[in-house]
Every structure is written in C-alpha cells, then in structure tokens.
Image 1 (cartoon, rainbow, N blue to C red):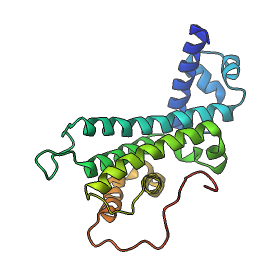
Image 2: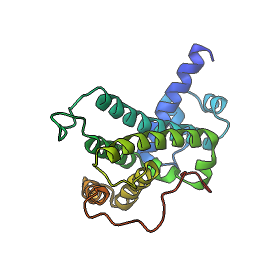
Image 3: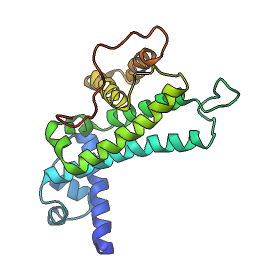
Image 4: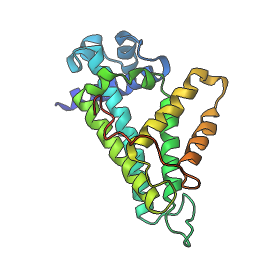
Amino acid sequence: MRADAARNRRLLLDAAAAELAEHGTEVSIARIAARAGIGKGTVFRHFATKEQLLLAIFSDQLDTLAASGEALLGRQDAGDTALGEGVDGGRPDWGAALLEFMAAAVELQLSDRSFCQAITVTTRQDPVVRAAGDRLVAVAEALTARARQDGSVRGDVTGPDIVLLINAVTQATVPLGDAAPGLWRRYLSMIFDGLRPEAAHPLPVPAPHSLAPGG
C-alpha cells in the first residue's frame, strides 16, 4: 500500500472510530468521510461496504483491549508493583492486575456507543474479528491463570469467563447512559468479589471453550 493510501486508511479508521463512539453504528459514511477529510469514494476504495468498515473498527477495538491486557502482563512479569504490593513483600498482585484489566475493558466499552451494538453473531463470524477475539481471550486467560495460581481468584475461573463478565457489566449499565456515571464500578466490584476463592461453591456448568458462535 502506498504511503498516501496508508495515511488515508489510518485517517479513515480514526475518524470512523470517533464517529461510531459518539453516535453509534447508524452514523453515515458521509459524516465519517467529512471527519477524516476525505471523499466518500476514498472510503469505498478501502472498504467496499459500511459493514466491512464496521468490522475493521470492531477488530481494532478488540485489539486495543488485548493490548491493555498484554501491557499489564508485561508490567507484572517485569516485577513492577505499581498495581499494589503482593502478600510476599512486593510480589506481583495478579488479582489487582486482572481487576484493572476488567475495569479498563468496561471503561472502553462504555465510552464507545458502537461497541455493544457491534457485538452480534454475524460480527463474531467474521474471520478477522474472530482472530482479534481469540487474542483477547488468550490475554484474559493469561491474566486469569496467574490470578488462579496466586489464589486471588477461584480455581475454576477462565479467560472466557472474564470476557463474558466484562460484557455483563457493560450491558447492565450502558442503558443508564450518563445518568449514573461510575455505577459500573459497583457491579464490577460485586462480580469480582464473586470470583474470589473464599466461600466459593462448585459451579453448575463448565466454562465455554470458545466465545465464537457454536464454539
């Protein structure tokens, strides 16, 4: 891809992400093109349909969430105790890292009106989105595994569980919009308390192996 074409594509994706975050998936291609400072024809040279553009944006969103988790893994693996000292004189606190990852994911979703609208069976069947979703689940599992190992969460919690619980917090609070900002923290705290091993009871069904439809 030529440098100018790559630049236009990046401008387009950034503008589309901003418009979708503010106005949801019904935003027009004309509005996105105007924000990017390009013509509608340029939009369709990069993406044949609006759906393809939405899939690219959603994939980027999942990659952003995965990157936030990878950054936390790197910080903790490097021995950074900025997240709080562990019980063993500054050991990495993987429970705190997992909670921070979940909080960052909920915040990103709630700040973007299109995120919840974009999560559909059709979206998840797209191979690019599915690959991005798999990366997100893998990062969630890596954080969860470490939290399981140090006893921060119960032993039967999995990465897919964590991703679904993040979505549960978002879905529960997004209908309230700006009427109750920060309320999501209450429900995330409740959910995370339920992940702790104290007084845990066996779960009635196993965790899903995959978050893809039919997985």
